[in-house]
Length: 281
Image (cartoon, rainbow, N blue to C red; front, side, top):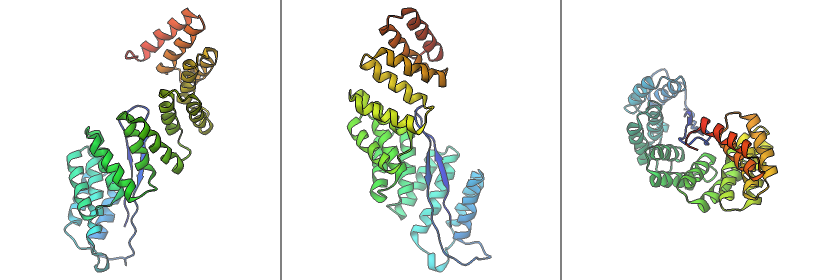
């Protein structure tokens, strides 16, 4: 039996997509009749095809059927609820998805992927404390679970709990060392704490992974502004803008670098450009 590979989207602009992989395997003889197992497989296939309403109908029927005798376990029905919850989530029915995730966890209290997915929905609904509890439980159930470490770290950033966020993002990096977004995120926390060498280390790590990472170049420029190296700042921000000509934050930072260099006309031009791209700056 298979579980889906799903992609979760977060609300803040700098965030990357998190892929949650949940894989269950059962050994069973091929059966002609439809039972809970075959219906679960059919429902999973329908979700992969984007046929979420059909998947919900099939999975609802699966809950009424029996698994093959050797697999008739309550925890197997948790997988059905988990899949159906994913289908509801894809349809934007958060309340229904939460109900199914709750049902799955009543049957299997340490189902890490369901804990993660429930945390994602709670975060979207503004229940940050509830999301944090679910991410923490997911990690307790499955210590080497990169998605849960990432989600928890990012949530802690949004909650302003920077020291905890640094610790959590560092745990994620031990598991996944090639995600430039996470180095940028951790580096920005170091920068806010004026730990400039550590911040530069992270931003350079992001650039090592992705040489065209405009966010990392912008952040390096930010470090140089903070340390009053305006020439270095302008150089790095020029690179960021060359990669992304619509990067409002880079223009605003470059205006500060140019102000520091005495280039008032250039600074004013950059401020106007930044405001035209993002009036909220």
